[in-house]
Image 1: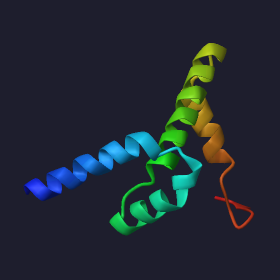
Image 2 (image 1 turned 90 degrees about the vertical axis):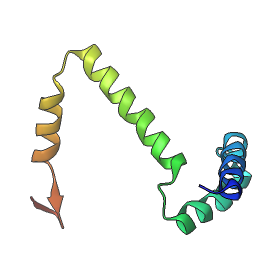
Image 3 (image 1 turned 180 degrees about the vertical axis):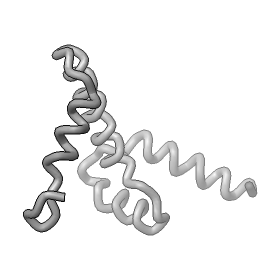
Length: 83
């Protein structure tokens, strides 16, 4: 990787660390992720936090994860019809 690319990458990481969750920067980050064809990290981290919470609650309630996935799969629909 070239020195310029490294500097740019470092600058973006620093900017991201300070502004990623700032509402005023939301549109800028949306454009950045779209232009670079990368996953929107704000959305990805929210999904991760929700998933972690679900796993914790599942463990607390003593429910097997396989049962949850089987239930979820049995309720999938496509245009209102069961899949």
